[in-house]
Image 1 (tube, rainbow, N blue to C red):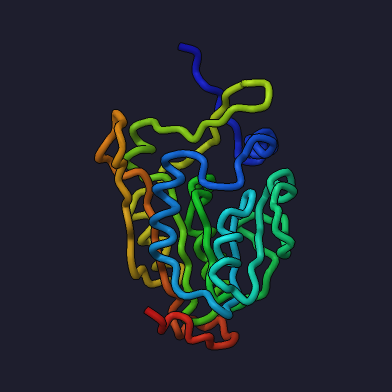
Image 2: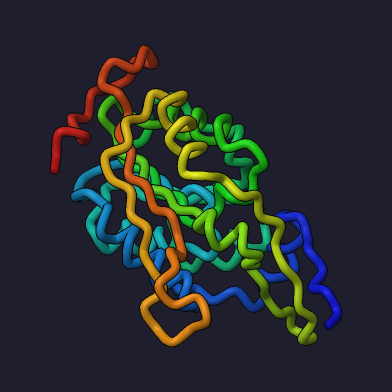
Length: 229
């Protein structure tokens, strides 16, 4: 069987954007989205960011839930053009985001952190942007599946199949990365495949909710967001 070519994220999403759906379009994404929704706090009146927003599925979630402001950031210009919402959007790398420290009460980052080889700089950058007590909810392909050879694949308009490069990050790497970024992990969900599948019962994603330490040293306004449960 011919191997599926693996592309770097920038190249992959440039090709994928034309066929990338605006909603969770695979069983894995639906499991991941359900867990992310379970971990989202009350966002009404809050300033929020969808980091690696893609076509904006979590931007719409934040708007629907009543966020005062929802912003999107993504490395792929082609994906940003697919966002239907009129919210502010910026092209930038997760490891170097063009926002002031302590800007956001909530950051969501769905299935993107696996595209970076080292997660510590990424988590430090996301943590920097949170207000003291602010919340980060993010997800990754589960390390068990990644080690078993699971790929995030897609088809282009001409029917060609590709995979997006993904780096395996263990639970311990996530926990260490959060601690290094002054983020306190409040909950971790590992939704399992609950439909007929050869990997039924396996965890499909790792979804983490972490809170910015109140005494972070970054300053900024105290939103009190982390006090809500």
